[in-house]
Image 1 (cartoon, helix red, strand yellow):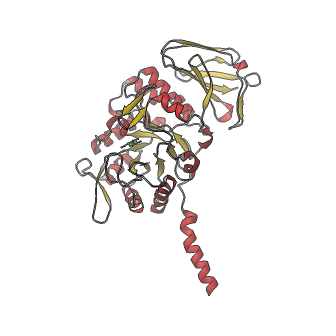
Image 2 (spheres, rainbow, N blue to C red; image 1 turned 90 degrees about the horizontal axis):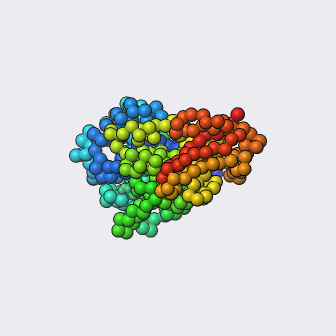
Image 3 (cartoon, rainbow, N blue to C red; image 1 turned 60 degrees about the vertical axis):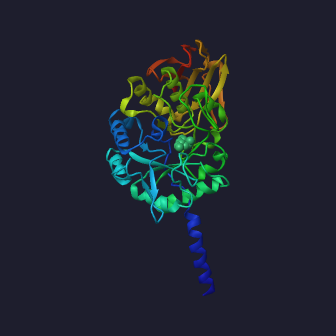
Length: 402
Ligand code: GLA
């Protein structure tokens, strides 16, 4: 009897531990979608979300792989007397379930934002102490993606707080992509692969190529500043668990070359592609960038290996990323504000990637060279590749194994 009791006791109390995990099989390639913050900050409401879903469904983005419509901070109203969270009734008069149903009816998925602290970064009710209750609420609403922030968390353990929310989501039972947003403060790459599907590696992005934008006590960062912050994180990324250098600023004010370089670099980094512009009013150039399926194919490559900077000379950087079937992506980035010429001899540049155990050696293997922005084959690796690059321009290629 005593033995039976002890066995039952062991089963009951080990179950939550055995089953507590993130949802597997989600985000096997980096998540793609849209988030309200970069363009709209706190100016969010249900019309914006519905119109954004309408736009994504028909403007080529859905066909190119974008899925998640994520509402960031400032959607919140109050908690009720039992502690359940409700949306702001003025901004979301139809409620979150109706919004999620609408987004789902467009063949898209619905994402929401909360924070591990008692208040979000913008001062709305956070998740602390309400994790299980919020996870149930999100499941009832039909939430597919949760971005979880890190404001107002003094004294909390990041790994502990995010693990609690992971377990709450899992207990609620609806598969949710879990996006950790603690800005790389606690080296999430070391513990987050078991907790979430993506984790921010830096502070917030800003719509500039290489600037630091100061906001009193904190700064946000241009594209290249973000790229420089953690150059050595690629070993932590892979299918189901990605480094997140923050959402895209394409279409939010940089030049065409800069937007293209930003997008290309995020693809080379196997970064989540979360657009952050007004999808209802995109100019053709922005749309062309966001929907180039050949460039997106580099990001979404199923090998799931993050690319890296192979070389840098006279402000021209060479980035490489191994792909499935022995292909490679190679990008030449002009970081300077002056013109630069590229003349690259494949035979003299042998790339050996110890992490993925792949080698790019054109003396042994021949490749067709395809320009991913013009979508044209431009020869083979028997010849040098040459290009003239303007300020902050990128030249992005796929080497297709022959
Ligand atoms: C933090 C995050 C941003 C955004 C804001 C919202 O700064 O890093 O991405 O979610 O909070 O307040």
